[in-house]
Image 1: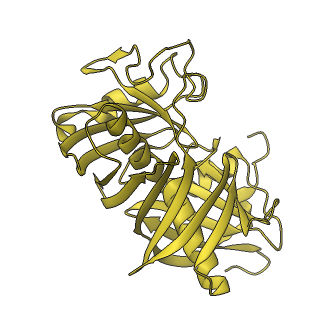
Image 2: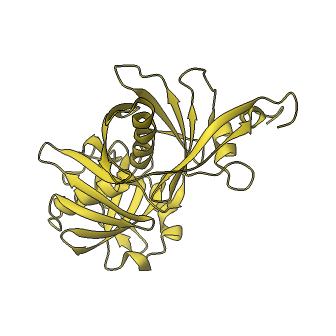
Length: 286
């Protein structure tokens, strides 16, 4: 580090390849706006990540508050894989097996599941049109009135953030890079949406690929896997528990009788480092 520069510590973590830059701001605040988040998430000039996670002090009895910004800099409500990563950090820090994390969409409960795996209760799935949300009243959100290219008839689900789940014959064959951004920004979704294409291989195994709102194609998405199982159950294609196989690997997902959705899978620390605080500043005239 050059003399006189102030550096900020971070951890690079991932859950099934869904990767995060995690900054601990519990003891000293770190001001990260939309522009700074985009810089840090940039894979050529920054550190590179799908989401930037800032840990703040818990506000309502939680172990920490988790602030989430997507790679485009926008702040979002929830991230299942990030919650699993943060839970692992907090559990290791306090030698505890259970953790409560506060998010903009409400608290999530997490616990160790053995063999480097973490289980997170994302809370209840919401399925009414106003909760997803969609721009117009829809009596049955298991069949949203939407056709974009070869994709049609999605299921709408909110698992802390909005999702549109399309069931297709072959998830591998869908050009998600082409159709994902068009669906994300469709007028039907006033807060934009995450987009999943899924193929039910059998009632306990689902292949899913995801276009994440504000990020693009990612190797895994915890809330996307949760939304996909909820959608499959609502369409009577699956039971209440299944393995959702993502590009980065499998997540175990359960939609419990109490309405809560629980995801379980591995997490890992890739590396730790420090970055120049100058990355957080907006250039003059910028």
